[in-house]
Length: 497
Image (cartoon, rainbow, N blue to C red; front, side, top):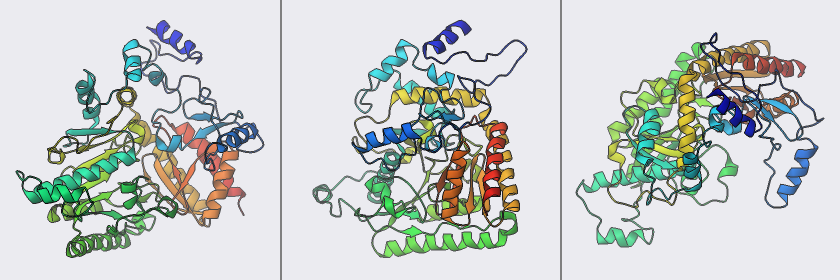
């Protein structure tokens, strides 16, 4: 078995790996290539000359201003990213938080090392029409295995934005079915008017979202996205209600009363908006919210906030959708972030993507459409991505990676809190769960400076919101990696006047 696996890795050019021995009862195969001891920077600037050359070439074909540098993925390993100029960086951003096992994990490299799985990759089906013979078993054994408690129905999609788009449609479908009655049929007027984008076939319904929220860049998802103007400007939209999301003062333990009042104020406004939009004859059919507002600045709300929000939804007969595209997959120390909230019952819908490799949503039976083609597209997901997810879930469980996230997260968070004490004029408001962490800077300009200085020291991080740095390491991120980051983070802060 070992020889076969080792030979396979050699075929991929990955060299030797460390294997378990009889004296080692528990070895985590976190990487294929040995990780370096620390980051190393070879070029005088980042992006280096090779990256700049490639960027110029790419820019001749498409706008590439957002490109930071080009990556040598063959040479990247574990928690370390290698760029085309030979710079090796400790990656705490992990492709916008999409890589749960880091780079070139051997278990993932082996997924397509058999003919059956390769055929799954090559013969990609239109799942709505022609699913493979093992598709129901895959859903049962892989996706249903990680489903949020109480949500037994699964709709697979391609990405987070399309997962939210179709989840919105499901919410509207369910709302209107209940309004008509379970046995109600579409009227001729509804059928005819829907084709002209007019009521009653295209009803004046709305979804309530929150200031600072991010749910995708497609047209429907953009209606509920409120993090940056550049995502929305020039695009026509619908006028749907937008409620304030709590803005907490930190440290939390010193501002409990103030933050409790913030919860009450925001929840009161939610109730007011539901009533206002009912009077405007544009009733709210559902509420969408992130367990942690990620792109919008890593904004948190208390378990009590989410518990009361769920109560408001139930009282008004509307749906609660938790967007776990960024927070799902274990980065907060639990597989689903909303597990931290002790909700009285499961949310109605939970959307996912990123670390789960494909998009989609879990939901209750009530949200299953009664008619065919209402939630439909060509691909309806990707069986090859589900194979990768199966390997990922197995590794998470076998290597106890949620425990690892808690351990590493404690080191990271305590280090960020210590930085606050040492440099209160520079940073504040360290926060987060697991390794899903953030810290604020006094200004956005200071944040930009710190990100660039960290890059020159071999640390890859990213910003979010107006002035925060967000940490999004892989689940394999260990305490030693946390200390490497913290040492360089303190060094950068100490050099800023």
